[in-house]
Amino acid sequence: MSFRQILGKIALWISVFVIVSPAILFFLWMLSLSVKYEIDNAAYPPVFIPDRISLDNYVQVLTSNRFTTYFFNTLIVTGSATLLALLVGVPAGYGIARMNAHKSAIVILIARITPGLSYLIPLFLLFQWLGLLGTLVPQIIIHLVVTVPIVIWIMIGYFETTPMELEEAAHIDGATRWQVFRHVALPIARPGIAVAFILAVIFSWNNFVFGIVLAGRETRTLPVAVYNMISFDQLSWGPLAAAALLVTLPVLLLTVFAQRQIVAGLTAGAVKGG
Image 1 (tube, one colour):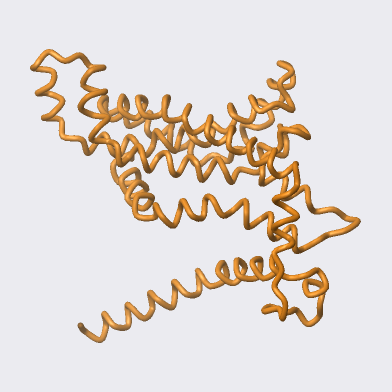
Image 2 (image 1 turned 90 degrees about the horizontal axis):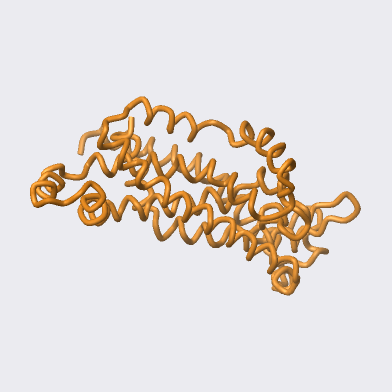
């Protein structure tokens, strides 16, 4: 290994450390807040490692009826939006890939990078006119704005890597386009579908803006519930940090266990989808 390669590796690790260390520090500080008593959380100078560790903050959050309700709301919204996105996005990605519809792919890319807030105002007025505000239905529908472009973009990349010879052979044997899609293209694209599913779940689960505007008191999702724990009268850092960690834990575990698939999916979509 040359001296220049060694310097390059050292520079890379320093860059990674500089970028990642703040996030790790914030996460560890939030973990520290969640296992400390309020007297330790309010201490000055701050106490990072407490003398006493308590799980009362987690018990307080988990025993709250509201938290359970918000968890199931999030599960319903995320699950429905992800499944609907797969039903729509996988065939759409296949069609765009096979028709070489590059302009359509660019439109999907624009929809993917456009802030969701741009769609919120007209959809808010529509849901208000339909009388759906405060229910889970508008949240599921508007989460499709996030999940559908992700699924389509990733599936375009995977279907473009599917060997055309297999589909041509199926056509020669008399298979219809639907049969080719179902029995040839879909089995090969299972890794792409898995990646699309994972990313759709992550982006939908973490969405905050849609929930705070469209949700009612009983239909809030977990990110909104954590935000609503902040008040001007009294702010309990321990329960707030515990709730934030509990909200983050599912997607964090999903990301850790599926990181290779996520990177592969993003790379395929970026290279083949454009």
